Length: 424
Image 1 (cartoon, rainbow, N blue to C red):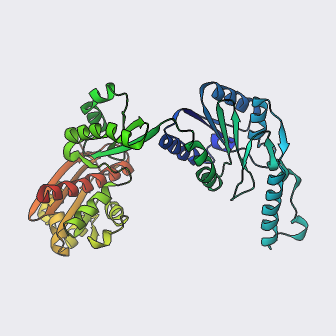
Image 2 (tube, rainbow, N blue to C red):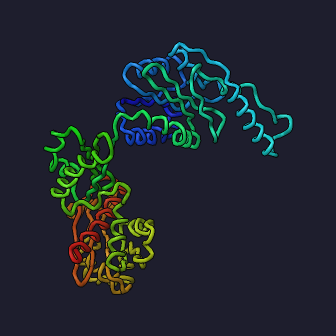
Image 3 (cartoon, one colour):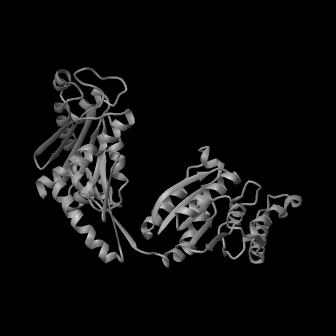
């Protein structure tokens, strides 16, 4: 079945509000196995909304409309849909009583409202109107009800705009309704890689992408990583898994250690922390251009306190000498941004902390400071573990923020690869 999403609200078009509802509903519909080919955002304009509804009814089986169900004159979703379906809008006494009790409770509980203003305004009853023959869905977190409207073989869902109202209503009432109408199950898996560029990664599986049908493969870059979303449609989850497994195994064969997880919810830093904990290793960081971003990513992981002991932020040459014992000769001869300095930073951090693993990052994040020999984006990363020293040189593109972000990803990846090389 195909589903189309129509988001209503001029504030969405103006960028005053980020449309998080669209992302949430898209994910839920994908999980249900529905195909979503169109999304549209419409301002509070009856003619344009009417046109969008008519178009959606012609090409989609399910319509989901969010927003425009409130009490004001520019809340026109319900009334416009009724006109498009040639139905009347009638008073729903159940909704009227529920709205009355809800607003009365707010007014009586809020002692700061002056007595003269403590009354329900007439326009609130607009929310108690419903499209004839529709199913009313109570709103437990607001006044505007939701609605399920069946029109022949079409299904239209109306949901309030505020996410804290929309999400519980969808989860508790709309989702069970839609589950009964699933024509297939859609199962997705995520294969996450790092240490390889998006264009290179796509080239490595271009034959799979060009020949795909079911499952499908969708690559996309995300902050220095390349993720592959594999999606299979089937009658049930077991059949979908049988379709997914051969593709996942083929990606594992082609990408090898570039794959750091096939768990959609697992991050690179979680993988690193889990590896450290698995082998009972302690970690120290030494950062220059990243300025604590690497340590911050690590401590965001639950359980990091078991393995991450301390971190040094040595932005200046003086700090590198003082805390990490980087030699003046190295700094003068090779510079702060060099393979030699990165190695000595990691070695010094290991000696100062007594940890098992150290990682050091030094680079030129820009926008200034670059030269022909050492351009902006040049980064050296070193990892020390079990008496061995690993070091990589990277040339990142982008602004200061992107270069620092990519440096963190590369540092985490180097820790991961170093542990795998030594411990397997």
